[in-house]
Image (cartoon, rainbow, N blue to C red; front, top):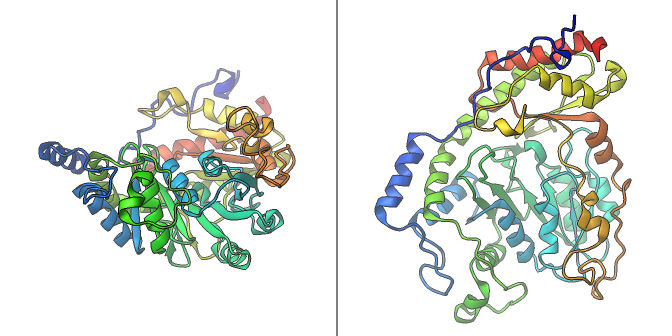
Length: 433
């Protein structure tokens, strides 16, 4: 008689996992305050006192800057928009290259395309999954304008080595800290480690306002260029007296007063939510590492991880079972989470398919039917997006990495014990697979 649920046995868990719900009465009161004020947004796309937004937006930006100990904080309607603003602020354009991670949300790479620059993918680190400084250096050319690093899964990038590379080659570092608010590297917050940082307030991040993002920088010029790109730069630069018109075709990337009010309350909760998340990761790691073939991910020396997800390395040579089959059996023992039923059990094999394998990169097709920016006349480089260019990321994604989200602040020890029990059960009865 089978014991594993995937073969018809009883599940370890028969109840849904609790949803991650950091929204409560404080956010409700903040939203009501804004609605009663009658001011849901106060941005104007013109050089006017309201060019910088309404009172909630400006208060959020002040509070965010204070919390993360940085000179400028700038709100946007998403982290994707923030990355577009950041790349635009660097002055990147046709013929330029932007080094990017292949193992992240697509916007980290497509932000280059918005300004007709070409993404060049570097490989990731074996143990920390962030961009590998050695691989980055091998991709730098005279056309390189900037490096978009990603604090993937909540792990800060190797700021010491990568920032040194950037200084050596006169490059700017854009830090995608969407998954790492509150993480630190040698005491300094993730997002503030490069020249400009970007955070996400999307609904499944540590804290959120539904949608939204924040940028931070200590550079006055970058900050002002971001504000212009965010809000119809083309209409503002004349009366404002802006002399540098590079990439001053603006967008409407503005945050609403409602989102800002929610984000202000969420920011207050971030330290406690992070503490609970890290405590849950430690609880799980201590138990999961006792299962042969599972290795909880390491933390970089001098870093405090934010754990957007909990990464594990899977050793098929130890278990004797292919990763995907083993994890399929683990998921069969568990249940989905409330509010996210259609997504199934939040345990995954790998993370995202390496970005260079997406159709646009395989077909070298971006803008129009001329192959721009990859094959336009301004681009004099040769870029490869063929499978094999980043062997570490491919090995992690297709055979070794496991990620899961069952670590958030609303989970109890009992919930975590069920996760451990599911892995233990599949290990014990792996012969059924």
